Each structure stands twice: as structure tokens, then as C-alpha cells.
Length: 268
Image 1 (tube, rainbow, N blue to C red):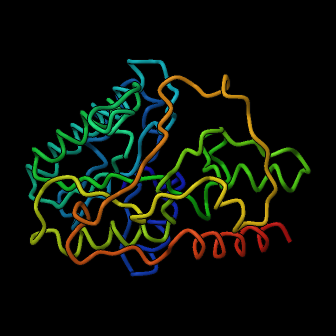
Image 2 (tube, rainbow, N blue to C red; image 1 turned 90 degrees about the horizontal axis):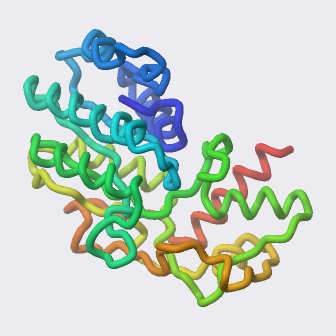
Image 3 (cartoon, rainbow, N blue to C red; image 1 turned 90 degrees about the vertical axis):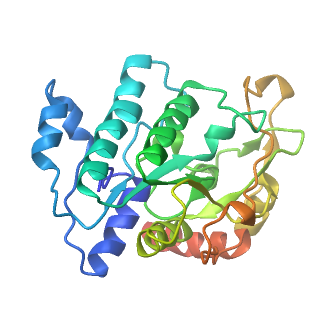
């Protein structure tokens, strides 16, 4: 698996080890070498049962075209070629950023890099999972890319103001445990599933305010001028785009409750 040191990757790795998988890890340290593509060839094992390709540059504000296309596209292309050649199931972590602001095409460089990689994966016989707004345990090191829920909680604990964008934006918040179950479902049912992209979301669109109410966190509002260009005001996955047989187990209220228990325990 790639990206095993990241937020979703750490959770997936923990689950795979619990299920007695032998996990070969490919981390971002690979790109420290100028010959990273050759190094990748030496790591990939043709006897693998599955490749979970989670690793990527997840900075949605990244502007370095060469970097993000290397990490998000060229890396994915090489892995796709390997799994196709060796007839190994490939589960790719994609993103709802592929929908952009018009629900058709990406609206930033990150989204386009994932969109292009997803297309290559699917055309190589892999399955892509478009994650919506993921939150949950293990995202403490994501910095500005951590979920809104985590950032609000850390500000609340520091007695700092928590501010929301006005005009009632809504998101499909998906708990990380459901993302992990989606990956395992894709692997277990790989042969039966169509080789395409599937959405991984809760199927609900919730106000940011609702998440904070469930968490017991007070909030204020930014001025409208602080809303960045290209901001997505609405996202929601639809069950018609879910994998057959997979369903999320956490709605927003249940996910926030589980996550708060983890955060409180981690800070004790």
C-alpha cells in the first residue's frame, strides 16, 4: 500500500494488520530520490494480492504543477501499469474534488491531478473511490489539510474563536471508519464490481453548523469577502454511485460522537 503514513493510510494499515495482512509500505520518502521510479520498481511485488493506492499530495492548494503531477499522476500511472501487467486488484483513493464547483470537472490543480489519475486507474482495470469530506482519528499531523472538525476542536480547546463561512455551505462528511470499510469491500468484491469510480460518502449533506452543535462547540462567522474563489458550497454522495453491497455505518452525529471520544481520550 502507498500512503501508509498518512491519515487514511494509517487507519487502513492498522485494519489490514489486524486482519493478518502482510503489508508492504510505500511512503512519501520514495520521492526523496531522483530515481524514485526505479526505486518503486524494486519495491513492487508481483505476488501481492492487492494494491491499495492511498498516497498522494493531499494539499488542495498546491500550485507546483511538476510536483503534484509527479506524485498524483505519474506515480499512479506506474502503479496502474504494474497491477495491470500482473493482474493484481488496484484500489485507488480518489476525491470528490473531481466534481469541482460545477459538479462536472475539477476547479483546482489538485482536483485535476486526481481526476487524471483516476481515469488512468479505471482504464487500467482498477477501482477508484471518490472520498467526500473525511474526518476521524489519525489526522493530527495534517495541519491545514486536517478536517474542519479537527481544526474546530483544536481551536476550541485553545479557547480560540471558531469561524464558519456564511451562506450555509453544506458537505457530505464521511467518518474514516466508513472509508476503510469501503476499501476492504472493494477488495473483497473486486471481481464482481465494475471497474469504475464509486463514491464514498455518508449520503447526507450537512451544515458545518450541525457538526459543531453535535460537538458542543460555539462558533461565529467570517465576513463574506473571506470566502475563497472556487469554494465548493455543496457536496453530497448518492447511493446510486456507491458500490453494490457497501453502506456507511456512521451518520454525522454518530461519527462526531465517536471522534470526540477519541480526541478526549488522546488529550487525557
